[in-house]
Image (cartoon, rainbow, N blue to C red; front, side, top):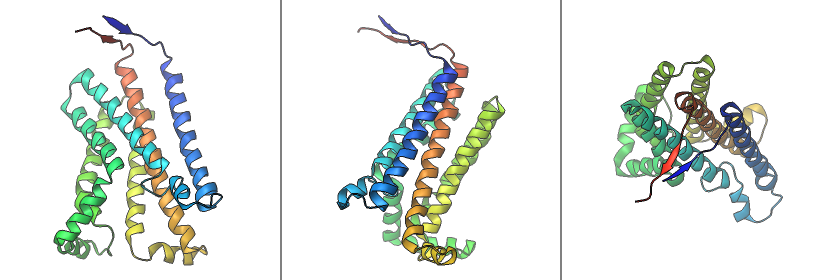
Length: 246
C-alpha cells in the first residue's frame, strides 16, 4: 500500500491557483495583441497560434484543459457525497471540456442547418423577433440555459458562504455574456455596424469582440474552478490518496 500525502494551506493554494491561471489568461491576451493582431510575426500560421479568437489557438487548448480540471474537481466532490445532482454537473462540465476540444456544438449546429434546421430556426426567430445568428444557439440554447439555472439554484443551496455564491453567479454571468457576444457575432454585419457607430474599424471590433467573448468564457471557467475547489476543500479538509498493489 502506498499513501500519497501533500500538506497544503488551502486558502493560499486556491489563491495561488487563481493568480496563476488569470496571469496565463492575460499572457494569452497580450500574445494575441502583440504577435497576432499587431503582426509582430509575419507568418500566418504562427499568428493563428496566438489568435485568442480562434478555436485552434493556444488559449483554446488551455480553455479545454481548464474545463477538464473543473470537471475532475466536481467528480471528486461527487465521490465524496454521491449526489446525483453533483454527478449531473460533473457530466455537464465533462461535456464542455470535450466540446471545447472538438467544436462539438458548432459542428452539430452546422449539421442541423444542413438537414433542414433553418425551418425550425425561422420559427424561433419569428417568435423572438431575432435576426439570423448561429444555428447551434437554437439547438443547444434551451439545454444550456436549463443547466445554468439548475447550477445556480443548486449551488446557491450547497454553498455556505456569500463569497462563493457570488463567485458562482459571476461565473454563470461570464458564460451568459460570452454566449450573448457569440450571438451578436453571428448576425451578418453586426460588428461592422458597431465599429461604424463607435468610430473603430470593423476588423478591430470583429476581432476584439471575439477576443472578449473567449476571455469571458475562459475567466468564467476560472471562477468555476476556484468555487468548486473551495467547496471541495470545505467538505474534505483532509484528503488522502491510497494506491493498493493488486
